[in-house]
Amino acid sequence: MPNTNETVSRRSFLKLTSASVMSAAAAAASVGMTAEDVMAKSYDDFPVPLSKDFAPHSQRDLVLTRAAAGINPELTKMLKQVGNREPQEDIPGYSQLDNALTAASWAVHDVLMPGDSAGITNTGVNSWDLYNKDKNSNAFQFENPQHASIAIKKAAQSFGAINCGIARRDERWDYKEFFSPGRGSFGWEDFPFEPKSVIVMAVPMDYHMISTSPAWTSSGTVGDGYSRMAKVATCIAQFMRGLGYNAICAGNSMANSVAYGIMAGLGEGGRNGALIMPKHGPRFRICKVYTDFEGAEYDKPMTFGVASFCERCKRCADACPSKAIPHDDKPSFMPTYSTNPDETWNNQKGIYKYYSNSKKCLKFWGENGNDCSNCISSCPYNKPDFWHHRLVDVMNTISPGAVHTMMREMDILFGYGKVGDPEKVVKFWSTAEF
Image (cartoon, rainbow, N blue to C red):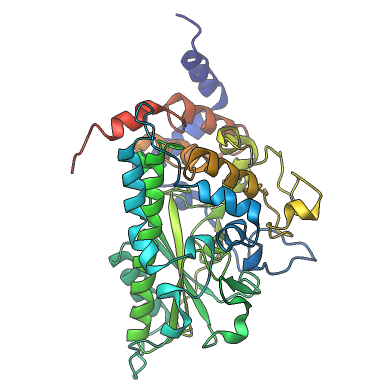
C-alpha cells in the first residue's frame, strides 16, 4: 500500500489512542454524550487568570470602531475596501452571485443595528432611548429563580438562539467608555438605568457556507449571523420589557461579548479569540441584553478542555491568511506579536489568553474584498454532530495531552477544516435541499 498522507494519519491515530480510552469514549459517543457532558467543570468566577493590572477596555480602542468612525485613516481605508472589490466571475466564491448573497445577508442587521458590528453603541434598536419602550407597568413575578431562567432561555430559543446563559452584570467586561460618530466619547453615567443582569445568546452560522472561507460565499452566513443577532436580541429585550423590566439589547457593542459568554456558561475562549461552545465550536455569533431584572438563576463559567487543546492544535493559526493568530505554545497576559504600545492598543491586556493582531486581520479583509472566517472554519470543534466527531471530542476530554494531537490529525483525516477550497463553493451552489 502506498505511504499516503491518509495512511500515515491512520497509523498516527492508532498509535495515539489506547483501547481503554477508545472504549470509554465510544460508549459515551454512542449515546450522544459530548465533551461537555463527560467532564465539564464549573467555576464561581472567570475561569482564566487575570493580571493585577487588568482593567476594563474602551470601545474606542476596537480596531473596527476606529475604522468605521474614521478615527484612524489607515484602518478606515482598509475597511472601505471590504465589499468594494469587483466580482471575478472566473473565480469560484468571488462572483456577482456570491457578492449578492453577502450583501443580502447583512440587510436586517444594517437596518436594525447600524454600526453594531463595529462595536458602535446606542444606535438603531440598541438605542438607549428604547430602554422602557412598551414596558409593562406590572412586573411579572416568577415562582423562583429557576423558573425565571428557564422562561428567558425558552423565549430566546423560540426566537432562534441555539444557546443562552444569564450572567450578573460585570463591570470588568463592560466597555469603560463608548464612542459613536457625531457624538464622540461618552460613558455609563449616561445609561438610563442600572443593569443587574446580562442575557447572553448565541445564534448559528451555516456549516457549509462557513467552510467556503475566505470566499465571499462564507461572508453570506456571517452577515446572516449578525442579522439573526439583531432579531433575537431585539425580541428578548422587548420580552423583558413586557415582563415589566428595563432592557437594552446589544450585539458587539457595550461589552466584551466573549468574556460575557464565558461568564454565562456558554463556552471557553479559544486560540482564535472566539468563544467555543461544546456542540457548535466557534460557528455562531453572540448578542446580549442588559436588564435590571435580577431574579434569574445565574449560570456559572465552565470549561471542557478547550484551553489545553488549543495549546497543541494551532489549526486556526495555520489557516490564518494574515498570520494574525499566534502560534505561541502557551497563552500570555500580553500580546506577543509586539511590545510596542502603539501596535497593541486594541487588545484588552491582562487576560491569560492568546492575543491576535486584529489590524493584520482587517488588512486581509480589504485585500480579500470581504471578511474572513478561516479561523472558524478550520477549528476542529466546528463540525456537524456526527458520531465520530463526538467520539474524538469525548476522547479529547477523557484523555488530554497526546490525544489532543490525535483530535487534530483525525480532523484532517476526515477532511474537515480545509480552507480556500473552490470545490466547496461549487458544491454549495450545486444543491438546494430543504
